[in-house]
Length: 303
Image (cartoon, rainbow, N blue to C red; front, side, top):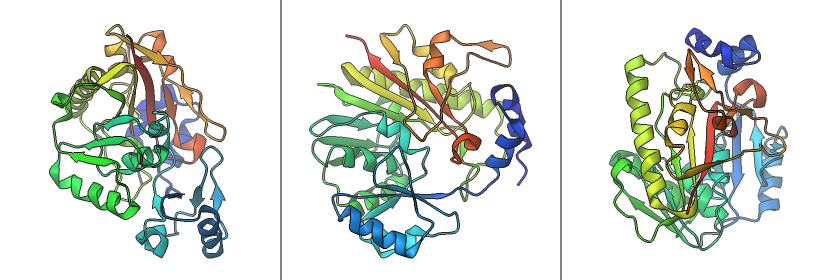
């Protein structure tokens, strides 16, 4: 696999050859167990019998890494909703919502539903999670996931997130896992391996900013918004976050949990400067964690 276009990020990475090599290597499989559907210890023991290479992920309970060649989606436990497959780096954004039972949470760009499911499990399936996506065709996968895992707290909507209409009385938290150029998915089957155009990057950054601004109007004062992408591009990451600073929002400093290495957001790229505050955002690089690439930012709406 040739990913020479990722060399544009040479000024941002500590080891360019290691980054390029990791970005072209198949991704380990990661599964997490569903406490609503299974005995966690018993299911973990069955998984270990089938896959002795099973390795616990330190920073998230009941979550395990498996070899890239293992197919957890074929296990009976997957079919019955006792476990779910989700890439490790993609687990962090929903965790940063810090959802608790009884809350009202919005997943603004929810399909195919992995992060929605995470939020429902964190809330012990108590409260309301509005799972929204503008593409009706993608919502069928989300509904199947909700049914398979036995989740009852999820309400599915199909709206353009930029103009999402349901405001009052305000959500406790909003997750914006925004559409992006998806460069961080190159390790996944069917992930992005080709270069994107400058015009697309400009277009998608405008969509991302619209989604983030809308999320900040939908969350209650004092509530939390988490913005994430699976791309390396500062145009879609730090630049988008920088654009909302001063609009009644404060960035929350991010500290990666034990077992996950994060780098701070960058303050310059290709002659473009960003405020020092964006260093409170975080980047996950594939050669640091043996994961895909991700960017995350957590912020609070000021009273």
